[in-house]
Amino acid sequence: MQKKYDAVVVGSGPNGLSAAIALAQRGEHTLLIEGAASVGGGTRTEELTLPGFHHDFCSAVHPTGILSPFWQQLPLEQFGLEWIPSQASVAHPLDGEEAVLLTQSLEATMDNLGQDGVAWSKLVKPFIERSDDLLADSLKPLGLPKSPFLLARFGLKALWPATTLAKWSFKGHRAKALFAGCAAHSVLPLDMPFSSAIGLMFAVMGHVVNWPVAKGGSQAIADSLAAYFRSLGGEIEVNNWIESFDQLPVAKRYFFDTDPRQLANIAAAELPAAYRRRLQKYNYGPGVFKLDYALQGSIPWQDARCLKASTVHVGGTIEEIAVSEKSAWKGKATDRPFVMVCQQSEFDAGRAPAGHQTGYAYCHVPHASTRDWTPYIEGQIERFAPGFKALILAKKATTPKDFQSYNPNYLGGAITGGAADITQLFTRPVARLNPYSTPNPKIFICSASTPPGGGVHGMCGYHAVRLALGK
View 1 (tube, rainbow, N blue to C red):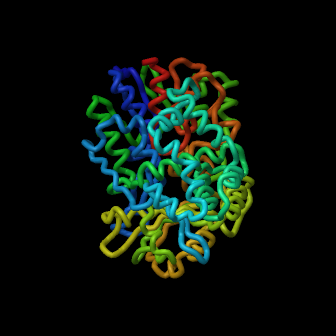
View 2 (cartoon, rainbow, N blue to C red):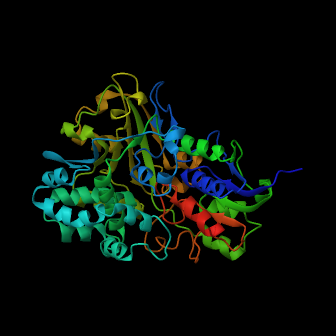
């Protein structure tokens, strides 16, 4: 006789794992199904280049992970998760001058910004002082906030295009560049409304904690979540790709940590045609092209202080970054992409053999781009770190097509769960009072294509369960 469950979760990314935990905590007999050989989704670590070099396949640096309101309630450190802080969250190199550093110290960051130090403090300090309240209200679906005045104050700034807010807030190019780099994590053109939201949030988080990496690799996040889930009595099944609802065991509820199109295809016979058509129209936005490196040593930044940062924003001025991000959105190529470089092994020595380093660099590219972006990424890094290419022992490129093959959620190389523009910011994946529900009362979606969107925080899965079970 087929085993029956209270709940089945399809997909084991951070949101699927979090949904499974939230269900098990409520006493639900839960099965988590994963198509790959291991759990993790975007939080996996592999030897992609040479033996002994451990690379994060997708997510790398985790401010939203360490600050996740749900994960902070979980005993993940008892199940192997250790956060390693950096000395600075962001370094932003500039031509012909010292880099800008975003650090937990507001005062040090202000000093680094010169004439705009006070303006930077005025922008972020009200939210730093109440960051827990801000994160609790912003990392959730629309609804009654616990701190309405704080969220309204944040929203009045967040709704503006990043270029506009930067122009109004700052006089000099250093603060504008730093804010633009943070805003580019939104994967939106910087002249688009609400592109300031992610920029402001990332700036605030950089003063709450120096953005950390997970010891041993991002896989440690998934492994600790899975171990805690099992400790609650949960079951995990890997190497089982679900292509049809008929493959699933009998359960009271089903939660899909998948993109909208996969949900529409898998549950085609269980969902109305009109709802499936709405899912199929979901906008995924730009993709990603990524390079992983085995390096002979540390990246030779012209400003050596860049080695203090877990993330280096390589793109120059706000004007340059704005051109790059708009090009990706419009489906156009640029020879000077905005590049995000992560330096995990600088803080977690076990990622690479002694005396060596791992390198991690990616840029936003047009959806499903087939261009080889390697020379343009390396050109940008070499611009601020002359001699970088001479350190390369081996490298591995991951194209948008590769990302989609690795994880079908990443359609066209879009790794953040879909575009967070004004049409989808509050209505992802479709406009519904409960964004995680479907017309079938037994089926829910809990992926990054639901509120609050992309990022390694598990809040989509947590809120999907909270609203589904009503407790």
